[in-house]
Structure formats: structure tokens, C-alpha cells
Length: 139
Image 1: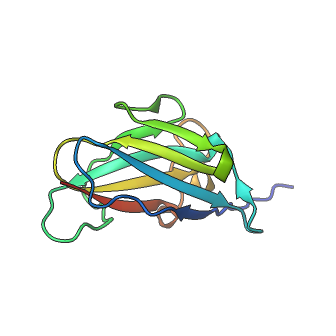
Image 2: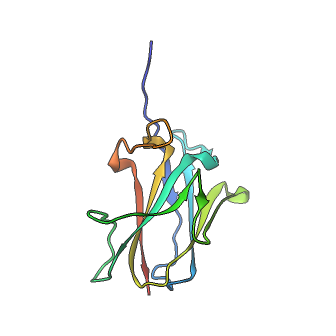
Image 3: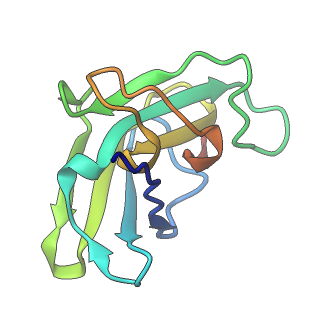
């Protein structure tokens, strides 16, 4: 007998500098909790991290419609472009130090966690609503 189930993490993103200076490190820190409130500390929980650029024309939003995502992290390649990803043991949290581009504008950062991925190397998104997003304005 086969049973399917869906894992949903409680994703808690800590406040981050926004707006930030283009070309600087932008630390993004988060925690993951299970359904019982227990902290999850597992580097393999992050499947993919991407950024999407949009010129600033008012408020930054997390809409990625029609935009091409730039990979920031994947388990196969690690962090790209001078960024780094690690676990902070003292707070059971994750930290991605994004080496942001120098181009001013609105960037949507998109997390794909293991909670909505199929198996295999492609990790196809099964439920777009489970992707976590945040906007960062670079000046």
C-alpha cells in the first residue's frame, strides 16, 4: 500500500535590511518549524533559491510573473556569485548572505523548500502556493 503526504514547514523569515545598498551583502535569516512547532535544522530542506529582478517603479512586490529567475543556491552547486548559505546552530536558523548585484531595483527572493518538490534532480514545483517569497529593494 502506498500513501502520499505533503510536508508543510512553518517558514519564519527574520526582518532584513530593506532597502539595501546594491552590491552589498544582504543577510536573509529564517527558521523552519514542523507541525508541532519543533525546529528543523537540515541543510537539505532548501532545494533552490532564486532572485527575480524588476526595475523599481513604485512599491516592490513579490510577483514573479513573466520574469526569469537567477539561481542563487541549489544543493548541487551551492551558493553562487559570492553568496554563502549556512546554519546558525545557536539559534537553529538558516542564513543566506546574498551578495546582491549592484543594479538598483526590486528583487524578489524565492525559496523552494523540500515541502513541495517531486523526487529526482529536477524537483519540479508541485504547489506554487508553497513557495516562499520576499522582496528586497536595492538602491
